[in-house]
Image 1 (cartoon, helix red, strand yellow):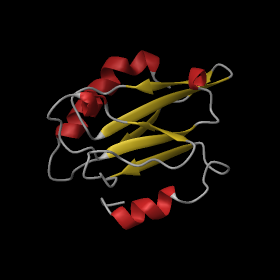
Image 2 (image 1 turned 30 degrees about the horizontal axis):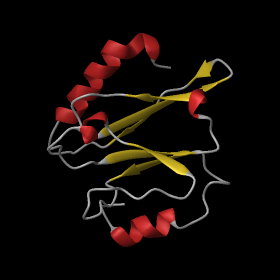
Image 3 (image 1 turned 60 degrees about the vertical axis):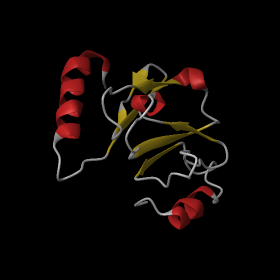
Length: 126
């Protein structure tokens, strides 16, 4: 969305809950109060560090349809970055790991943290 308020509002004001279960957003618009607006009937997954004081700008969020039971998925936490969010739905014993990764071409820090996370968590990722 390239931080565009208009683009973000256009997206969230469409009735998407009938067509989409998971929506990955990069560079969302952040309101003056520091919030990211979510579409109706969707939950927002933020990077873990979003909840820490003095965090940097969020560049990756995931919207999860509220029709999906919260007991049927879990958040995947990649610490130390505001550029990665993840979720792991469980569908009848079959697992899938979904990551939304914002790579800044001028800085390799996110890629290094993500690679480290993948190597460390490999047994639990699918």
